[in-house]
Image (cartoon, rainbow, N blue to C red; front, side, top):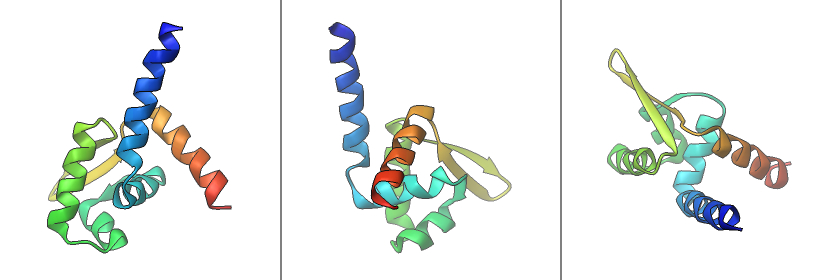
Length: 95
């Protein structure tokens, strides 16, 4: 029973992190593969400063990882469980 309670907290945190439309858009984009800040900014149609704040929060929450290559920063999914969750959401809502 304790394991179920612990998992509920984990799932609740993940769903809360995905609850904002921009964060969900970002996650759906990186589901397909790593994306640069510019690619994510263009897709979400928000200012780069706002995107940087979203990305920082998502990294802090453990949703995203980043790597720098030359002058570009690439973002990708941090947790395989989130990838499975996003694929399920996509299958249910986007088909």
